[in-house]
Image (tube, rainbow, N blue to C red; front, side):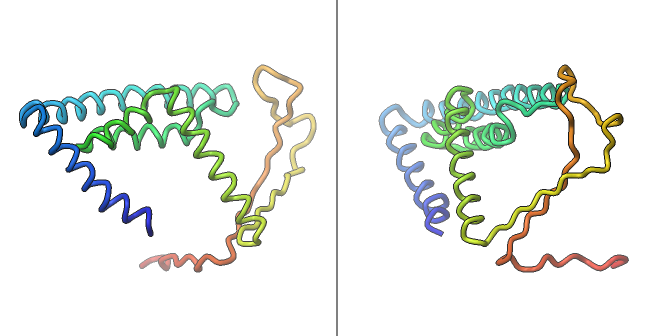
Length: 176
């Protein structure tokens, strides 16, 4: 809850204060121009970086390997674009950091590390149970091989994630 208070109340107040301070120092029109410029350039940069991430993702999937940046990077590009379009000095700075590939990789690594720890903690405490079942229905002769490396066999698996404290999922009835 504290994060939401900071995000939706404290951050806009700080952003407004910074914009007013900059406006007082350099004037209204230059401040407005700077804000519009950041939004336009941020939108273009987000589009370019988003396309790069998508192309890398598709290439990796075509080569049957995990993408280097993965979905976390794609999400960070999206968030960076939204932050750059949002007026404000801090949001522009953070948006640029998320769109600049070296800093985005560093931030993505931190996000992955924190997510892994949260999942491990949930699994250790018993709130999360994960089970993997390997399928043995594929014969050795018909088993697909990874492109470029015939020594790697592809094994079909299924996974089930069980969260015991979660409320039941209510689905609409068929035909309603």
